[in-house]
Image (cartoon, rainbow, N blue to C red; front, side):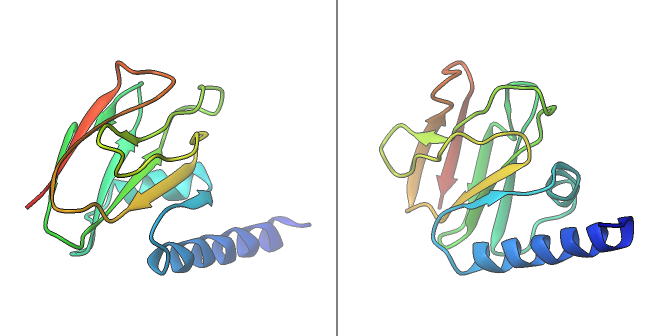
Length: 130
């Protein structure tokens, strides 16, 4: 496969993954690290909020959204970094282990949801839906 074919395949897979995420309640699989982390650095849409996982931390630590807004976690760690999860303390969601480049999303219920990373419990965050 030449570079042009590889680039076209990457774009096609990215578009497909975004499409799938828009029509699923939770998560989507691995994405190229450059594409997902680059997207998270841009302003979110009105129905999406991004949480970046980097440096063994969630950023922002607290995410405030309106009801119906999808929260998307993107693992932007270096490739050799161990995976992370986003696990709601109240049982509202529990992602699979996200390797660098993976994403997970959920539309959380109204309320305050504290969450953490199962393998690294010192990593903590909060989603406030109001």
